[in-house]
Length: 246
Image (cartoon, rainbow, N blue to C red; front, side):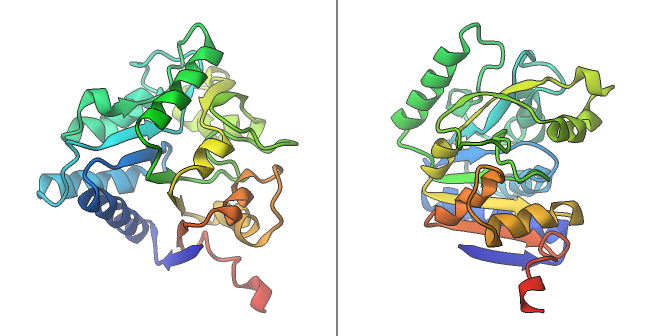
């Protein structure tokens, strides 16, 4: 595990974009696992800038998103399909057929999850998985539970997650209560994992995921078992890591 602490969100975003672009430059047909939410927005903005400057070419890159809300149409303003297109895909030269996001409108969710896993496997597996971390330690939409969910699956969102995500909706009742998410096993199969965290509200989850015991009560703690994880943290998110030295 590598822990990189930077001054602020802007530096975090640039550092993360450098890691991702480096992956694609060294292996143009890289398979990237991508995340949504406010944390990776700056990273995507930096990647778009790099593409427009001719630094990186995404024409052979394949992507798989971590998750998607259940029941939202692809063109819904709060769907992750819409988010990814608005903030990244429409600004770079990635091929549409190389973009994969779980289908939140699928009639047979179990079949959709199986097909998603098969597609990842057919592509050769994920080379680099980008993650954020929730205040409750969730990664993807894998919420605190009694067990680690293995593969892509339907998940019931925690109250805390619904409250956090309600800022993107007109009111909290509009927030979907379920989502399709890669499971912990899916995430852990990635050859490299890049986790980003910014802000003091993430400090406790970051501390427990790195220093705490490995438990489904804090899903991100399982990353301690992965052989190649990079944490990029701003000073606020990393603020509790030094407390064991005091």
